[in-house]
Image 1 (cartoon, chains in turn cyan, purple):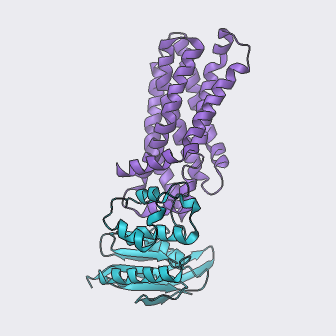
Image 2: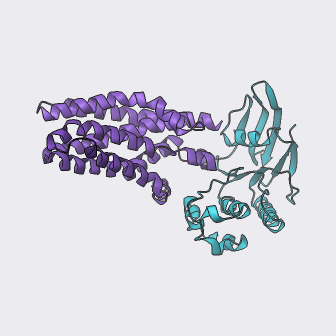
Image 3: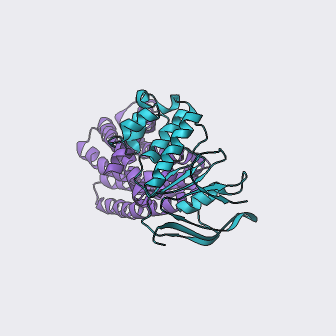
Length: 190
Length: 215
């Protein structure tokens, strides 16, 4: 049981009288991945936000069995459009990270350091935002639709990165309606 | 200190956010003499009233998108989940805005005051009053901005503007006391007292409001 990163017990959430999900329970161990599936508006993103502690659940509780250290990428990329790629990396606190050069090459962002984020395509912005996840030192990675906006090649890069992270004993929770090759358990909320 | 540097970078690179309020202040102070008959006596009559209102308006513009931008691009969510307490981050954000906008405006206040009345000792006294009032106004409008985070900054400004009126009254009275050469230290302590309460309470309240918005 000591391998459990997070356990969720009977989590329920409703907006006014509209119940999004009820009695959701699961636990995530080190090296495990949970793929949350559900139709539009079923509360997948809300569930992630509850796990992150941004939104409070109406019922149920979440227990972190390890130090709370989460790497998160949501629908919004948390990038400053008026800043260059390099400045955004600086804002993420990753400019001096030893793995930065390698990841910039992998994601084809190396030649774009001086370009303003506003001038990047959505896919390029997504890749830049993913650096936050790629160079994390967290024990739990939470991603909300991480494959949206990425081409097949970059989807594969992300998938293989996440599979690697699983081997490094990290926990991953993500939502996606795009099929991906990540070894994961499925949690369906509807 | 790392977070301080990063926030400073964000504001510094967004020139219109810090230069805009300074220019608004400068324009108001430049425009003031043009609206009255140009004589030293006339200039001095309404100068300080215009000065305080110019500081108030500049601080209102300075906080226009202090949280809105971070809210819209998802940075606030990232800020909320990192290990630095959110209250501390709010304090730093306000402080950086004050350093880049409040301090230059306070210095300009001194210059404009000196240019208008030629009284160095009076103008030097304006400096601490301008510095304190700019920090108080900044905090008040930050509160307003947080309250109206997804409803536009104008609403927030309207909500918090009445809270700035007592400060304007104290500022007006303190100038009268200085000009009449009576004891004005009480007004400084009053502003310092307000400032010390605001410095502590506003970031706490703002952090709760923003968390509620993100829910």
